[in-house]
Length: 195
Image (cartoon, rainbow, N blue to C red; front, side):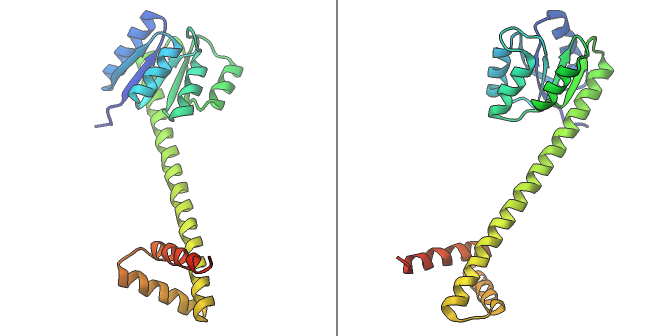
């Protein structure tokens, strides 16, 4: 069973809104909010935090692309833009605002199914890459602290690098602390001696 998504629909044409909602529910997803103008769409998205936003491009108050831009300034929610026509400039703008899929009306069941599947897959890939980047940043940050702590031990205790590393590892084991935390404590303690 695929994940049941919580969907926000922003559409000012009532019949299109009904059609989208029927197709989304038929796919097994839940429509958690509906907006008929751009301002409400942004407020609802930020309040309800849906898994996906589907918005018409031509909306009152804020157009669909402004809706996506405003939402993405607060939190990144995968989005699908719906338009009455194919327009290269709109597609370019949509891409710049982080829209993951562009649909042209009329939209049928198959169109919305493909759009949701591709958008969800792209978003999962984006999150995975973001997590990997965070892990890499954390690893580099930890490495920086460990290298600095080794340098302090080498300087203060006149140790060679391998012995300084072994000393840090022993402190880590003895205190049942992560190596990076031992390194940070050592750096902090060293800074007190330099005041």
